[in-house]
Length: 196
Image (tube, rainbow, N blue to C red; front, top):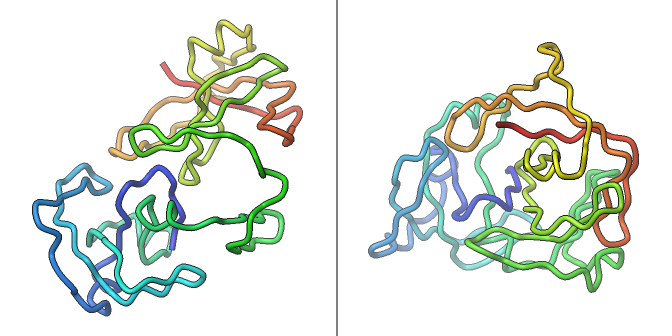
């Protein structure tokens, strides 16, 4: 399963969805799938994607080649993730449900179903970064990158094509960043991307 804090309703491939017991179709509910299609929301149960367990959870069932390409059975979205307290240990590829002391007390907002943090780029305050575990790179709004004077490469070989959630391929241009800070976490000398 893919964790995606940018995905509102969790998704399952048909082969996994068929194994779940259909509890009910959620009345008057629909959600957008990966390709932007409006799909019916189903309540399935019991749900056991350790460490996430519940009697029922809402999913959309979507047959999408993306699931096969990266060898996953579905996406755990906000409707499941936001009910849990998680620690993601990327260094050791571990997830547990205890609080992470390094992020304890770090404020965030939830707007329109997305998690927003304030951060710093090169010690300059930047408001409203979306925390999206489905994103592959750090992206910075192009206008903010220009305001901060971040160097940008227009070299064609440096441009990184990235497909967004709606299947649009965006040409992302790299910026070298001296430092990026999120609360007590600070990373130095790495690349962020922006697109026109």
